[in-house]
Amino acid sequence: MIRFPDRLILKNWRRGSKRSSHVELGRDGGAPPSLRSGVMNRRKFLFTMLASTVVAETVNPVTASAGAVYSRQRYLRPPGAVASDPFLARCIRCGQCAEVCPNESINYFGLGNGLAAMGTPYIIPREQACVLCMKCGEVCPTGALQSISRTRESILEKVRMGRARVDESLCLSFQGNTCGVCARACPLGKVALQVGYLEQPHVQAGCVGCGLCERICIQMPQAIRIIPNYA
Image (cartoon, rainbow, N blue to C red; front, side, top):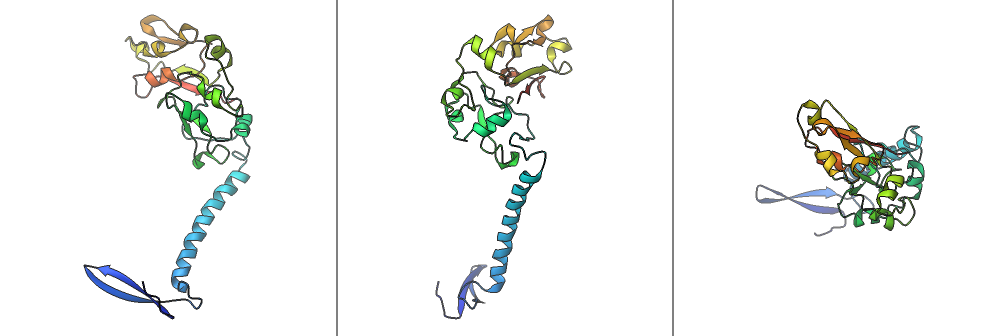
């Protein structure tokens, strides 16, 4: 590209032939005012969009608090997560919990779920449930995820991801068929999920909300799902 003192040659290619068009430079040697205004308009647009997102998060009474996390999807926090407000305060978005997860269950929120939640870990049980290996709590450096030993007693006492809920109108076992795959997938057994007639699932007090029952359910939509616990 050749520069002249008062103009810049821009080359356009159309239908295989070379055509040259001359665009006047600005007085300062930079882009001409017509091009410069277009660049500034794009910059102004991007800046306005970013600023509006920040302002919305700041002034909106629903999402302004540190613990306000909104999502179009129902999600779980990894096992051992403390309550929502202290969790968001402690989590440093280091990513170690997802790196160590053997089942690749843990994802991270983007900006679409609010500034407070950005970069924090979450689990969608229907996509990939938690296997209760408890490795995420072992590597968490701040205590946002508590370290819990992988014993039946410790998990039942300290893990509170959520609680399963059965939709009897969707569950095959409540429609005169036998299924029971959810109960067989439960890592805690009868203390969490017990089966009755035709293997009808009945959620027990020991359910910690790992989501394996929801993940394995053969119905579409699923007949059993985890109701999250963020408290």
